[in-house]
Image 1 (cartoon, rainbow over the protein chains, first blue to last red):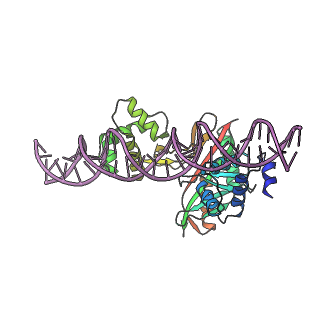
Image 2: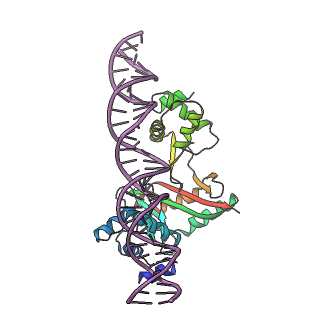
Length: 132
Length: 132
DNA sequence: TCCTCAACGACATTTATTCTCATTTAAAGT
DNA sequence: ACTTTAAATGAGAATAAATGTCGTTGAGGA
């Protein structure tokens, strides 16, 4: 039950928040924009304002429930935080998003930051690809 | 002389284009937003519209003179194309941008795309770091 | 120098997102 | 269950980045 997940994350279990969480969990697309979520809400006959969708998604991000990505598409997309780190590959032809992990790249990134006297906090790696 | 660089790139050597190119070449910051360029123009007493700055930067990008990057700051930044590929490391504390190259990461990226049946077209890798 | 079309400047418009504020609602207390 | 209250919401205005429109200007070939 989603209400518990929200409580656990320190958020009041309001209707908009429950609905949005459900949509993120049940949607076919793992990566949705705020606009996508809003349209889905409307399709389901819910009365939720767009501003609320943005607010809630940002809160979910702060609470660690979702991750925000800025691909080159001009708007942010959100995905449920699976807890497993991964990067993304975006097909320029179809828009399909593939997730991948590569331990070696992770290590190299950390090493590079260290070499320059920094601690790696986070990173954004997106591969833009096209079908062979 | 910049006018020649523009001609070579297939662009008419207009005053706004020359000025903007000079700014990119002489600025302390290697990475400037359209707004940054615009403000610098105004500081120099030039009469150039903001729309022109955006247009020109986009043309420069198409012509291969500059590269556009979308860091997580919400707006695009542009840098002169040095011809040498590199990725970026952004300090979350100071905003400082460090450039780096890593052949190994490049190879791994290509291999990952291949493994999924794609050709790697380009990529965006940004490390967000903080001082040790 | 003249002519022409690409480029420009000013400003309207679009898109993504955030803000404001009056109203509603979750949930803690009675 | 009912009241209370601070937090959350909805509606729409506001903002920021970027692009479009259109009448005017100017670069560079004739």
